Each structure stands twice: as structure tokens, then as C-alpha cells.
Image 1 (cartoon, rainbow, N blue to C red):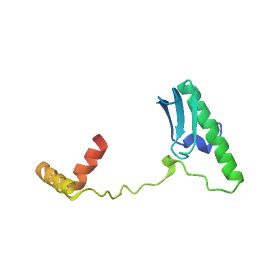
Image 2: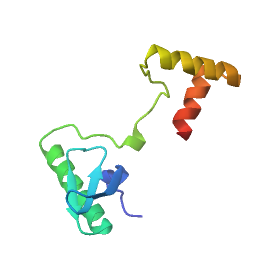
Image 3: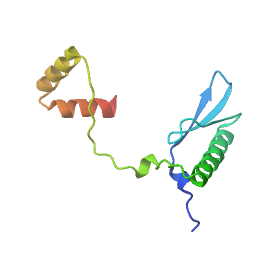
Image 4: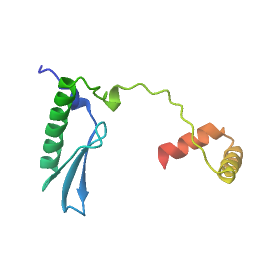
Length: 112
């Protein structure tokens, strides 16, 4: 089996750009980079090449290379500030549903 390039674990996305009238390839770990191309496939190929070169350059310069999002450890805990009225309404909704506020908000985040 071929050795996996560390950048293969990065999070890539290809979107249509109305402004550029082309597909744009993006990398979540290196958000300053992008690649425009006329097809999805070419945009993905282009951004992968750009990211690999950027990581090679960063390594050569002794810069920290971002870890892939998939390799990072997540606690499952984050804080969100909301207006007091939103907090109150969520507590009421959770109470009426017979669940904790945490369970209600977690379900809303997971399901939209």
C-alpha cells in the first residue's frame, strides 16, 4: 500500500463561484488557499496540488503545519452566548419536551 500523504487527510471542498463563473477548490485547514477551474475535478486536483506545495514550503521554512481536522481531538463541549430571551425560550421548550436544555440544543444543532 502506498504511503498516505498527510495532506490527503485534509478537508477539501469544491463549490461553484458565481463571481468567477468557475468551480473553486478550498481546504478547511488552509483557508487562505483556493484554486479556480472550469470543472469540479480540476478544482479539486488544483487545490490538492496547491496545498501539498504550501505544506512542503511551510515544512522547509520550519513553520507549523496544521493538523487535519479529522485527527484533532474534540471534547464535545463548547459555549455559545445567546440573548437572554433565546435562552429562556429554549429552557421553556426543553421543559415542555421533558428533556434537558443540553439535549434539546444538541438535537437542534444536529438536525437543523
